Amino acid sequence: MKVPAQLEPLFEVGVVLEVIRPLMSGKEAAVYLVDTTHGVCVAKIYKQAHERSFRQRSAYAEGRLVRNSRQKRAMAKGSRYGKRLLEEAWQNAEVDQLFRLHAAGVRVPQPFHAGENVLLMELIADEHGDPAPRLFDVDLSRGEARAMHSHLVHQVMKMLCAGTVHGDLSEYNILMAADGPVIIDLPQATDASHNRNSERLLLRDVKNLKNYLGRFDPGLKKTRYGAEMWWLYTRGELDPDTVLTGRFTNKRDADTRAVLREIEAAAEEAAFRPESKYAAKKAKKLAEANAERERARQQKAAPKPARNKHDRPQGGPKHDSNQAPDSSKKPRRRRRRRRPRGNTG
Image (cartoon, rainbow, N blue to C red; front, side):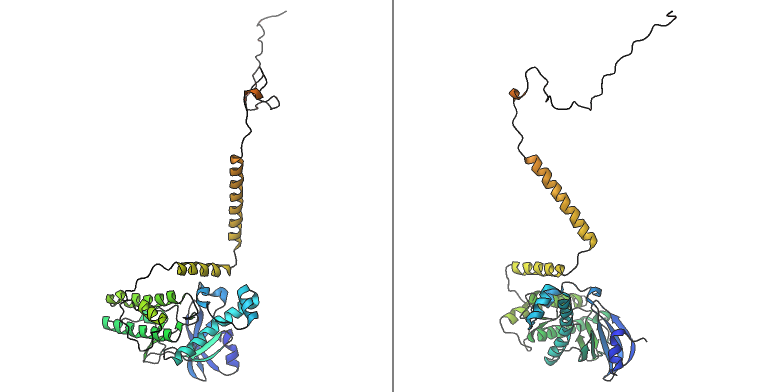
């Protein structure tokens, strides 16, 4: 098949030998099956920012360190240079997380090459050597679902011990390889200790797992592994060998600060989106209508001059003499005199 433009540099230097076929296209990237010097691999081509549908990126990118002060200012200002740096940091985050998690013993794909919006990594295959299906595409028995849930919760715990929260974990980004499930799609993975949204993202990841696998084993929906895991992590008592119970009864008051942080993150994300012409026109009309209502209210609230009977001239009309007559009244029609009939001579 035709070589995608992003893979042409790797094709020219001999790293990629052949593009076999496309595998899938998601909200973040398009994935191809390619033959390379490392064997059959997967090439992940990241989409441009305007082509992606991933929302609230600021909630995931918070806490990522930028040592260069000039780059940090450009990224905060949202200039063209800053946006390019944000894109590079967003893509490099997945490579960094793959190396970190692989070293921590988490089952993730092994990366081989990264650069120019392309990530070349290990092909996750099933027992027949074909690309592995997603967890969503596999039917499970009740016992298999319970064993799968236990294994995946343990993987999430190992990620948290390595200081990482996936942030978008679900049945759609877990591949069923021959040697067990493999977690993929990590560009939005966040640092657990530096991101204020880490707890919310972790609880959502664990909730997604129990809700899906709970379709096969309803008893899983009553577990609370996420809350137990985070509580142990904040106390410094969590390690990869910790035995979780899934029962957690620690009660806390409503975290209003977390709600405010979520609102601030959404507002920050919205600030990066350019306002459409329709939205600008609608906002202008709304501002004009509000201004008109305010002027009418002020005129209505303005005090009227006091008047009494001494202000009118004696014996004269009640209305002001300088006031124009009411034009709404019809003028009185003058009757014509009838002439007598017959000869008037």
